[in-house]
Image (cartoon, rainbow, N blue to C red):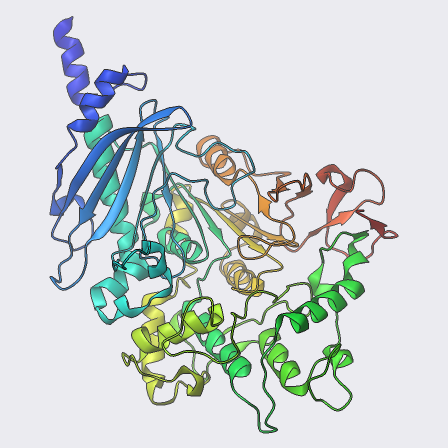
Length: 549
């Protein structure tokens, strides 16, 4: 009998309800674990666990594992990763996505993208969790690694660039799976990926490139169309920072962005039956920007100058390249700035950019777009982004397509992911001023061209959330996406009648999560803060407006 017990532990590792001392011994045994080259499905020189120690999170004991994956190019940096192994394991795992340019360690310890308020973290629910830094990290004196998220210089090294784009995801996944096998004696039965923004692009990539590795994926406000998005950032920055032929600046100070947001809200807020600071049906908010023009076109209080109007028109219209990029993608829609998205707080603190850009002082669009042009596309750290031709690419026209092939998660061939039962949730806020809501809609409509409606609904759902911006907004939407994915992938229960909650302190309100193209309309009666008082509709007819106050 004793022999059978010993054999069971050798083959299968610690059981789910292992005693604390057993878990501690197993955790310590992972220190300096070597991850062979053959365990990672892309070229590396192997990996190693650098530390393993027992830790706690809200009463959940787990083994915290830190490690590194070594590059092929000796001048490239390691990929740092963290794996969290709960003592009581549900047999499943969650891969966390990153953000911006990555470069900081995604620990997998925090609430996931768009998590529901008060929801236990995946680790606390018994999932093994993990994340990485995508393979670049620069040390700054007294500054945290998160500042790397705004520094694109790492892309001068090709292996680091491709790791950031997508390969680092596969390498981190495989290293984490090796650690799980070493600790638990087996790989997870289900694997999920949760990410937003850059993490959303990463979510698209894992479903497209490594469909056998994941059972469910959440791609929120995804930067999937990366090259067109970065060109849109430059296009917007040029409108903000350069003077027009009439000598007028296009700079938008806070008082002017608030002026516009107030005017749009005054016209469109109540169209959904409720005055609550949210435009629920932006497609039917037809705001005429010309009504905001100062009489002489010059910058004055209470109106917009011609230069400011030009900038807003740039925000609201599409960026389009002269030639198609990867998978035939050629444009990215404009932002919903004339239908409920508020630009206030997005422009930085100064109207004239530093070069290289300085965080907080310059707009986020310029920080990212300028960095991409200098270090991804041109390789010239001194390149002037404000004079780049975003339509043709100028002398770098031939480089746009190769960069798109590397960076854009634009492939709609999800046949393998679909055939093996993978599930995909796409979500985007209507008030996003960092990535246009229409970009996710664009990808979804491309999927509709490839698949029948019945086939697509069998593995994809797409939701637009009114009032939700880029991870925050008037309505800070949160829901248990992991649970929705898990029961869909594991038990075949389709996501129906999902509800998002406003995570802002003291908000206490919820809305139905409506599948595109429907949106939540107030029924006309009932608690204005309760999802049950709203219905998902496709039409534009609304009851008499009520007030949320």
